[in-house]
Image (cartoon, rainbow, N blue to C red; front, top):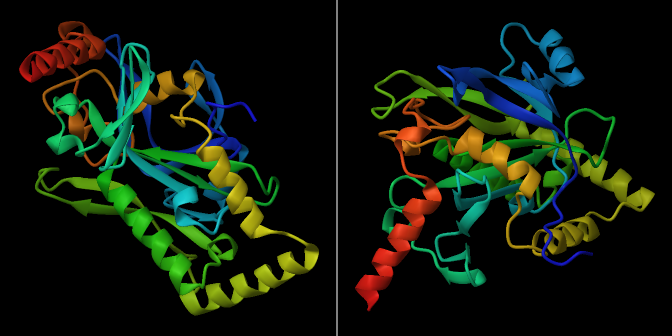
Length: 309
């Protein structure tokens, strides 16, 4: 295994509740009120739609706001990875990733491990450069039992809801999360921050028309069939743990630029509220009117160094 390279679940498609659009010569994220499944191929119209996008829409009336899913792993933290992340908007590369206690920060001396006080208490993260950033991998359909769809989000509501549901369902099912028949759901709410307009976030639950007891019974039956066939779920989770711990940053160089464009767009007056799937609006301040993120971080580091001296 190549050291320094995070081995993450194979991805065959994306789940989005928004898109990147061009307005006045600028590419900006635009939120939506339904799911869209895409491939990993980009064309002039944007991300190409995945064939499952159309089949799921035919099975639903109205907008696509629920997707039947299963998970690869029993460990909730393998299915959903959420961290405080800071990306360089110029290069698209991750600069600093932390969990509220410790962080890995890229600098002139390589990657350093430092304390992480969370964005609200971190001088390095001032100005909205650092946000919670979550990646959820799910299985959709039966064609590829190891090929997942990935949902990326900077929404506090989505990350909080998904993390709680995953841990609760794992506990309630006696650690059979990977066998539960579940459903991603798009929920709406209004807050003072959204000026009482509807915002949407992603939640998780048992499939429509079923109950938790029935889902657990189905999960136990599937688990028994898998064990009889020789399927080792514990070994799969262990392999995933080793893959995630093999590198510093999960996003690869080729993916990070698209992630920064979609979730860390050029700064406006309220940068923390923007991003695909985030609970907020989108600013439209041109990037050319602001200094680059790297320049701001360099100046901040110099200022902090001067204070320390």
